[in-house]
Image 1 (cartoon, helix red, strand yellow):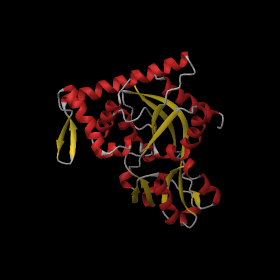
Image 2 (cartoon, helix red, strand yellow; image 1 turned 90 degrees about the vertical axis):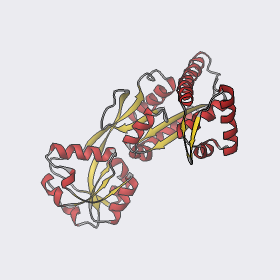
Image 3 (cartoon, helix red, strand yellow; image 1 turned 180 degrees about the horizontal axis):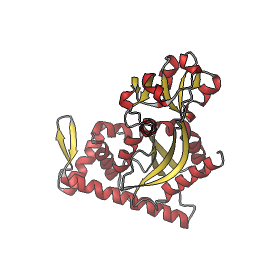
Image 4 (cartoon, helix red, strand yellow; image 1 turned 135 degrees about the horizontal axis):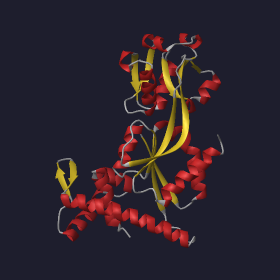
Length: 301
């Protein structure tokens, strides 16, 4: 079993910040420092280098962190196997899920609610970032499983298809674009609002336009916004065109606040994937969550 001191060390090492670790662990910085000093005394070596207001792991700290990650994985597997043997063994379990903005806001909430009602001893933490950042968080062991729009595959990760999602070209009901049907060649003349670099929504738009011979650099991009909600709210207030996930704008489309603008011969569709680090495919907690989510949405689509 990992000791509380080791868990505190792992959180400081993950965040490389005593301040942030104190916030996530709900402990004072002095208490955290005391535990770290106790570990350093036990191992007879420093675990962190102090650089003014920042810290980094020493070689000993890096070794300890890597081994504790392995130990944590083994402990999780042990708990899962024991639970298979004895259903009365219900240890408190944490699952860290990372997902891109569209998934976090419009797909995950109902499935997480149903999952937590079924598995009452599991605590879930959700990290909401763009797809590129979620992949990086998974590689850094900050999360156990991610859900993203795949832009580039990484050979140290595995990918399991989850669901498909349409991306629509839309404008506000007040925009002069609302009654137009566009062609791809019209796009360089149309004022646009786009998502930030690293966004899966932006990636699917760039890929589709590239296949039609259109480079995003040639477009009239008025503004780039980080996050689906920020982009949606800007388009509602403006008269420009934007590309937004259909799942994110169902209410606005139904209310007539946003209007789809057809673009001839341009279909934008993407697939969401569960992503895991290779070697963790047999983690029962993660695989069980994936199967639950797949069953949940297969019954609704």
